[in-house]
Image (cartoon, rainbow, N blue to C red; front, side, top):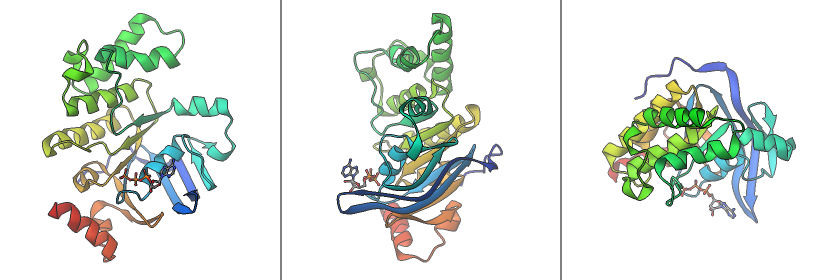
Length: 257
Ligand SMILES: Nc1ncnc2c1ncn2[C@@H]1O[C@H](COP(=O)(O)OP(=O)(O)OP(=O)(O)O)[C@@H](O)[C@H]1O
């Protein structure tokens, strides 16, 4: 089990959600989600496929609009945010997508430079190079700077995807299924990286997954998304001491696998 990070400040909320609802036609995906993410915390959202985990983080990243409820991210109310404020807010949120989404025609270094050149004005080439070096070092892949994404393993692509997200120094990291498709050892490397990023870059993170090993290794706090609501939360052991059959079967299924 993860040691609780000493940097968590439970007096500061970086995300606060109350009564969030989201439907697609008559399919009610989120049915009154309440959650808080504290400064410096890794919060794991567990749930079966199709329960709305990705919908939730897309709403937090401003990629989808809530139907109702309040979603406050870094002090901004998502329901009342102007397009300009949303653009600025998005730069403070690092979204690590499931498929890493690297540009295949660019080297690793160029992939990392891309968000900087696009979003940050007046950076000298020296500063750009320095930032690229820093994030590559943080993910342990300095030697890949001139390689093409096709030359990287799945685990390395994940790491570069995380490095590219970190290059804008986000306050919040959103990890969408960070260990999907990786073998157990590579998955554990990614889990360790998520914890290193939390400390080195002082980020607050939401990690959505159905991988219980990932949840246990990275989560300071775990919540379960069941039937469109957060129904259990606490440490890994607290959540899985529940007698709720849905929680028990989720656990059994993961470890039978
Ligand atoms: N833009 C959309 N339009 C219509 N339906 C959508 C849209 N986005 C998501 N859904 C539906 O909402 C439900 C929840 O999707 P979501 O991607 O959040 O699941 P998830 O919990 O992340 O699952 P997984 O672990 O498989 O990624 C699914 O049934 C999906 O089909």
